[in-house]
Structure formats: structure tokens, C-alpha cells
Length: 144
Image 1 (cartoon, helix red, strand yellow):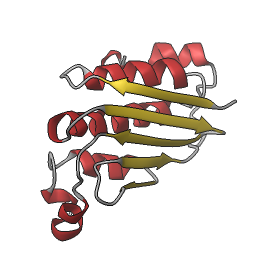
Image 2 (tube, rainbow, N blue to C red; image 1 turned 90 degrees about the vertical axis):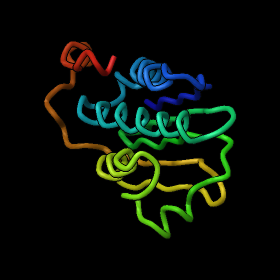
Image 3 (cartoon, rainbow, N blue to C red; image 1 turned 180 degrees about the vertical axis):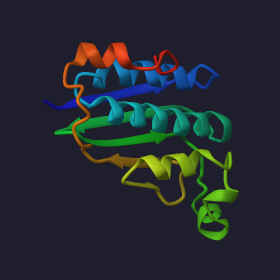
């Protein structure tokens, strides 16, 4: 089964929580626990960056099909690709957020001349929690 999610994100300190709740509600039955946890961390990090450093409206899009996750966090900023290219991830934005994203995703990138960040998570190995109710009970409360 495929899951699609598109959420307008408030430009506020509550934004990471809003996206975690939306992703959890839509994707918890579609993904193994560890992959869902990784997805929640990635969308939280990218949303935090959009709120702190972006401009205009923010939108989160996530698509899940056969365990493959494709997502985007989009704002109306003019971009930071040259900062990443010229200085490296370590010197850009919040110093660690994009490193975390890079460590949890298979691939990620930034569309040229924008702050439109995309990412991919591939299907994970079975983690022994095939029962969606069990996965809900095992999730750390800070991710809800």
C-alpha cells in the first residue's frame, strides 16, 4: 500500500512537532519502526532548518511505496547550494542538522537556487516489529 502526505507547515517553533505528528499518523502503518523513527528525525531536522533559515510558506511532502520513502521540505528561500558546495555541510546552517539527515538517508539534495530539500530512505531490513500497534507502543514519547 502507498501513502502520500502533503502538509502546509506553520512557521513557528511548533513546526517540527506538527510534521512529526502528521508523518506518524500517515506513515506508522507503512514502515518498520526504525525506518519510521529515521523519517521522523529527518523531517524534524529539515523543518527546523526551514523555520530558522528559510522564508515564506513551508510545505512537507512524503511519499511511501513498498518501504521506499521520498520526501521534500520546501520553503520560498533562494537557496544555499553554493554554501554547501563551497564550505561543506559542517559549516552550513545549524552545523549538525544536515549531517544527521545525511547519515539517516540514502540520498538527499537541494534543488539549485532554492531551499527545497529532498531526501530518500530505502526499505530497511525487517526489525521484528511487524505489528503496527506494537510499533506505536514502542516509539519513544518524544517522537509523538
